[in-house]
Length: 130
Image (cartoon, rainbow, N blue to C red; front, top):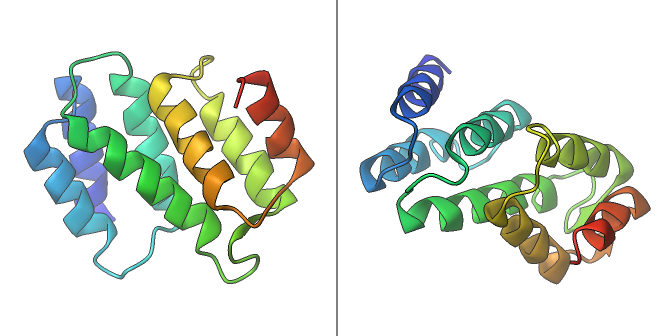
């Protein structure tokens, strides 16, 4: 996790995510093939810090897919968003007090792919017009 912590700190200090940083995030986060909660939290921390800045377009795609993989790829509720995941996801999306375009894209992606969505997340999606 040390590599991830340093990468997160460097990106936040820089204020934007460039293509090399997306590639490094992909390498570090997918080293074991999974995105765990700590890694997903790190992605939200980065997104909150760089929201609205001139990030490489690959950042949006990476963020959207990585969070969807974390939420929908678990063994407890594969393909679905359960109440625990929904509670976490809503808190993460609301972490900086605003729902930005990348977070909206992630919610749209999850809505399109999920076999079931907790009413907790459904309410947030409705509030965002998704």
